[in-house]
Length: 256
Ligand code: SF4
Image (cartoon, rainbow, N blue to C red):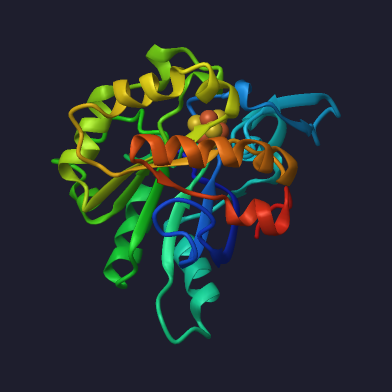
């Protein structure tokens, strides 16, 4: 059985998207099927001190450079971790499963077993996914009980269209999941040059899922630079604006 790696976990509030502000336990799994170098976040490798470029979760994406910091856990150990976070709370926060791309593990019995434990305990489970993995909902039926935030990547991710847009995977989620919504990362340039709207329309046509747009921003400065244009863009096109609360409050600090 393939091991399952956890890059980090923490209890906080959801910083972006439809459930912004909701208390949530975050589990960030290691590994991703994309690299998204276009987001331009810089990290220094703990492995060989080289400079690495990618998204703000690169430490959960790049196996070669960061895997030694990831924890190899069983489904029961993961569940224990969640219970530890909530043991003093008089309510059940959301459980947010993110990455990297967490659904690269969707058939893994450790991952699926963990999902069963959290769902049976009564937690609301949210997957944060790039929506490129075509889930077989008929065989792996537990995924029908979860909500999906589909953060489909646009051209500013630097990934090729054929790799980042998988219509069948989006369709399966929209058709089967308890709840699904889109979340796009936009920058001022793609709005000004007019291709943000075309790209969103192309991806979301034929799907009824709500659309949230948020500004690109690896830190507070970049977030502020992009926010106003994204707000105007949302007003003009009838989309929902989502801020990135964790970056406003904690800048680029991890695990908050
Ligand atoms: S899909 Fe998400 S986690 Fe993976 S590289 Fe792109 S932005 Fe990062």
